[in-house]
Amino acid sequence: MSFNFSQTAEKKMSEDIFLNNLNLFYKEKKISKKYLDILTDFYKSYIKAEPNISKKEIIALFDTLLKLIAKQLSKPFNFDLYHKKITKPFNYQQFGIDFIKPLVDFKNSKLYGLENLKKINKYIEKKENVILLSNHQSEIDPQLINILMPKEFLEISSNIISVAGERVVIDPLAIPFSMGCNLLCIYSKRYLNVDMAKKHQRQIHNKKVMSLMRSLLSEGSKTIYVAPSGGRDRKNEKGIIEIAPFDPQSLEMFYLMGKKAKKATHFFPLCLATYDVMPPPKDIQIEMGEKRVASKAPIFISFLDELDMMDFTGNTETNKIKKRKNRAKYIHNIVQQEYERITKG
Image (cartoon, rainbow, N blue to C red):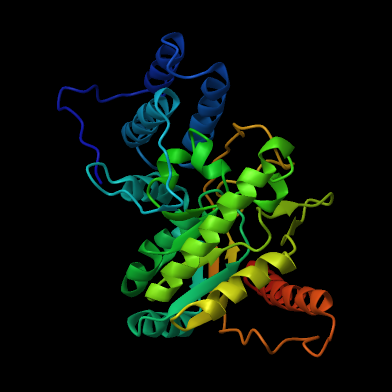
């Protein structure tokens, strides 16, 4: 996707052009004061993060984003249980890539596990499935995976189905990026109890999504990305990023879905070090509309060796609950150790 400018456009464009448009949208009540502030700060951080890209390009990207957000605020997009990426008439997937790509420091970024990507590709070609058990650091992880993926594996990354929490499908700023992804939309475990009146309804919703996922796996040739932690990694009190613990019940559910599918399902750990490009808020935020801060930074992605879901430390435990905890801890440790390896510099 490219952005064209009129030949009569001013050669010198200041950031005031976008901010003026933003304030105009606010005065016309197309966006709220909250999103006026969020977008203002986001835009300024983006300008600061990438001084080498022309302001024309940045303004074009943010003008497009602003129009898409205003559209969502006036008429929110309704996501299906299984949302397929939208590329026509507007290519939301390419817009997300174009928007995020300038923030990646490619010179210092690296992708590991090419041999495992080859294995994944062979499974997909055989109409088998792959479930990626991953940590989750940035709201834009699906785009970042796509951006760093080698050309020969773009078919995999472009068609990954991400298991997404409700926030990425109801936050107006996130929606334009989410519309460009394949999503299975669920309610995250950590938010189920926020509104007890809706808890039962949300649980039913999640069961429908799981049933749908089993059907997709039975079709075969599916690659599904899931973060068993149910949320993003955050810094601890010492300022060190911690890989959020994997939920044993979540892992068990995906394992059972894979076993019940008519096509073979393979499990691979995936390690993401993407935090610095767009970090999550310091604390878990219940209310909608979190602050976004963009930075230019290297990212590291590692596709690890295939898992034998029955072979792990503590697999001889007879207590089912303890055994599931042992499996979750084992897989989490694999991702944790890889994270420490690829980020140690």
